[in-house]
Length: 125
Length: 125
Image (cartoon, rainbow over all chains, first blue to last red; front, side, top):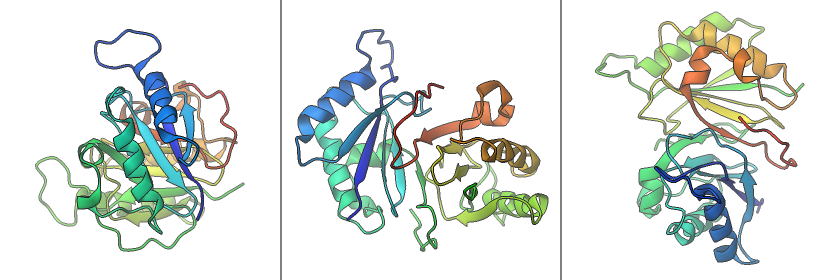
């Protein structure tokens, strides 16, 4: 199976939250701590351009759809995100059935992008 | 240079617009007409999950950042989108300087995602 990569925006601030480190950086740290050595590859990114819906992550993998999620709580969402990424990593195309997705992913979806160089399947959301 | 692919959500409806074909399908047709044979590869997609900000497109290319844009007018934006995609296709990494981007892209940006399998450059927005 191809690697799954979890991108975490480290530039995101919470609403009315000027604290340092920023909410996005705190979420990145929480994800790394919760993931452990068997978890997905996790990379901090300087801005995913979803500034209106912090905190923000994206999950991508060669040959799978990419998903972007926002409105994530930096203190509470690490385990939920990792559960959702785990479901994603078990699929052939990255499309987890809607009802199986964590609620934070259903409510927080920002965008999805097809895999490059693939014939697009019938993949309505 | 790797292919640039322009994905166009064909499921998008305009606000208070129940007409058929849908706004997204009309934007796809307008883009194909405006692009001509030398244009980018253009693919219709059944939902990019940006339902709150129709119409929506994404631009992607092997080794470059992916960008997602919303709030695009189905009747008026085809040429602007193609101009923006042309600038993208001229860059090594997909990052067009902010001031050079069409206003519709600056205002309509929904998300960006790093290229897979690359060392992330210093790429603040």
